[in-house]
Length: 431
Image 1 (cartoon, one colour):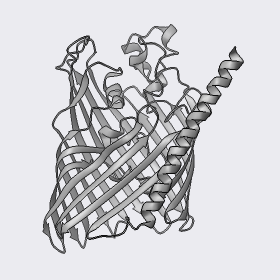
Image 2 (cartoon, rainbow, N blue to C red; image 1 turned 120 degrees about the horizontal axis):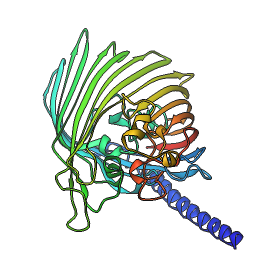
Image 3 (cartoon, one colour; image 1 turned 180 degrees about the horizontal axis):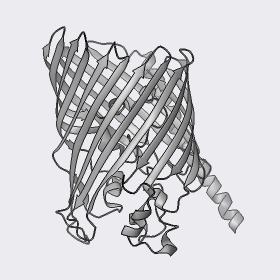
Image 4 (cartoon, rainbow, N blue to C red; image 1 turned 30 degrees about the vertical axis):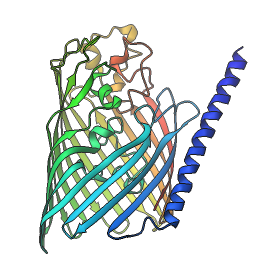
């Protein structure tokens, strides 16, 4: 009987993989046809580009990343995007991007608007620019958040998860509202400033689990929020410094029936990020440090939260040639900067000793050593591989690593190993 069930599961798994590969092949062929037909060219002021990437991840222990990576590995990491821009006037531009992203339980595919806005440049001279963007705009946080959606513009397959969380990607990537921007160019360097009054994207399951550690009948609702960044660049970008921050506000819309949570609950996330980078012909050295304050208040049946997290990474990129590039990074994340080993978390939540193996202290931190290699096969095709040695599970997905019963699920992720390895591979194409 067991042999029969195992054989049946294998057949189902093979069928799913075959169906996935058929869909993937169809998309690749469509993109190639689009490229050959010249859609990617400049036609009457309209520019269209796109990208496609397929990843494979294999992790050790019980720790899953972007699907069941701890089993036979996961092909669930896939990104397909198409973006367009149209400039009817020299100082007016429309931009947008559609994206289909699969990344385990946090992102199940489908087509969504990644960003879409109108950009009006009110002032433009040799020494300065000033303008306004209206719509869904990228959140100006750190050095990489603006471009994290395109595989070719990331420094690695996985960005430093201490700063750029994939488990709450929608919340961090873009917001709906108004953004002002300005740039000043001088002999002593360039200043670039952005400030937005926005509503965050907060309606997805991964954001709900990150805030409530549960799947509730109600929904997380966006509240008016604020975000901004100031970048200083010297010598054409050889030296870069940035200060960015946000106040992200959300609430909870309780369901009319069978909901023990209050509709008056609020959640506030306030990150401040300090960034520095040095670029030379072959080297790029980057470091970012973040302080993240979190407050959750007035949820019936949920405890109030008020603590401050801390994150940082040190990263070096070396370009062996125009086609080959290596990356080395140390990345550290602490959910609570006053409880770096997570032991106080177990005490505060009154977790009995017999359950502490299922609700480990290492779910409150993560330290990641990353080594990666990039090969630009052609200007349009890129292959990547990287290895992560990780101590802790603080940034892995709660949805991909759910506890075995409802009692433990509010302490996600649970039933995971503290010391684990992650191997990642990715093939990407763009036009």
